[in-house]
Length: 385
Image (cartoon, rainbow, N blue to C red; front, side, top):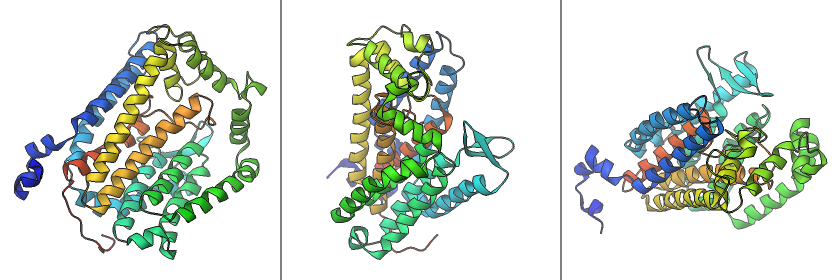
């Protein structure tokens, strides 16, 4: 029996005890990746803190405080707020489509103009979906999760925001929402027959969806992914330049601040979607492999935390947040290597961007809360609130 299990219940609620229960390995790895991101943003700006590095550093510092604060929150509050948060975020996504507050940027109507600021509800929808699905599975049996008509409820919870976000169109966020929800259904115990049937249906429907369900620029991205050399100065430019940056780094890289593709601005979106290519160019295989190891270590630690939770809600929510983070890493990594279409998914903590960093850090706050309160039990069969 661990020392924590022997601690009296009242003592477990002390702030000092909660701080001691934090997983400092996870916090350390998160900090390392964010600091590498700051260093790379400084490099690609020609050795200047502006316009990206200083903002990235300040955001991370502020969100680190928020993350640690969220880690102190008892899971019962995450549980109670799951459905209301999901509903609120769904309303915000709907407002983009059906009210004048919807704002178009970069060819996609995925921003909500609140007057004093603009927000991207799809980013936070990923978080709300994880919490709502975790609460639903907490209140249902293993048989319900394996295969029953009740699964229409979580399927609808995933499908509705997926369709709305894909329509904006924001294919990257829609993919993350759909895949995160699907991963949570699998983790919760979905029948393997259903999984195999769904995978087969997905393979069959992808070609007609690409040809008839996508916008023209999205379809061009997919076709370019299959043959980027067919349009090297147009739609294939991003992937080709990314591959050049990845390959030119060699084993040890060209050196910090000496990456020609990024420094001479041949590499597009070098501070967001393709920042990993900059790491590979300047620090080579050794540097990029080290970053991959850090990401894998974070994922394994988070899965371990999920497995330790006593409540079903905690296990499913932490596993969902881990899947959400892992999908960001997997899709961006495949994208910059030319193994997946360019869909605008950043590399978490490394890429510049406020909304993506905020959702990732909120997610880590939930995972750390699960670690701190891993002995907490939550009652089953509660109503909406």
